[in-house]
Image (cartoon, rainbow, N blue to C red):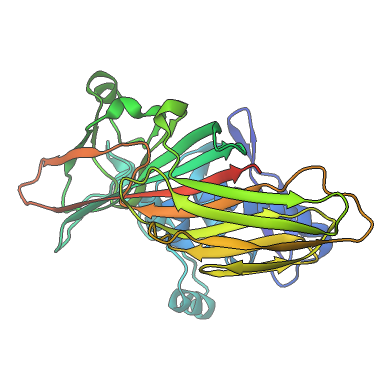
Length: 379
């Protein structure tokens, strides 16, 4: 039996009630506890890049297989119930990430993943960066990733639209570099949340990000764009979905096309729609991609793939309804998933990235991506 802690936030303090559980079994009485452990481990214990550093994919099975490591890291993150060490590179020095070889050695020798030495970053004025960092190739990559949430009415007008954006960084630089990142249009950003390494006063006065970066992967900032006049809708859906009163047949036609993409290709398009319960089956023909209709869950899925502006993808066909039932009260909504490489839909652009404090010239790269969040079209 292993004792496991579950994090419950209360008045900005983390309380650790204890539960007894078995690592070999998953009885129903521990189902609620497992849900709490899963939620905490995915959202609080290993946010952003830290989750990938330890487990790759955070799931119930992964937590169960690495329950001791989860417990050890939680213990290091907290001091008397308050967050203490939350940086990925600091945690990896305190608790070594699990590997097959390390697991075998620990089993044979009875040792643990706890590090032998206190991380050097814990004793410095820059606790998020360890000292003595050296790389043969010095690189700094930044990914600007924006997720658009929107609701479009049946006439194509935007009811609501907003953008949630993040800038993720992968910095592998020797020594103690001091970076500045400037934007061409920083006033677009609203409700900004920074990594602790960012000097907030300089951002307030100059709208420039100045920071000594952590070593490796980290999230530099997250932001929000809520002004609808600044949110461009990158795709549109033409639809014709109708049901007849006196017939058990209906018509289903949708076409997807690019709208405001700055000439970039829309790819990874997936269309889903929850059909009414009275729908028995659908006979559809796609112009591209593949579609599946589940007659049990009434879920229609259409994997479109990449959109060719010269030949727009469409899905057309008939809908079979249960005999003797009235037509559905309302038409189904259409949900879209897509991504657009090398485009930040808000118009945010990085102006330049400069480095101070070190003499070498690093390789620098910026990548943009827009993807759909909760993107819904009403019909």
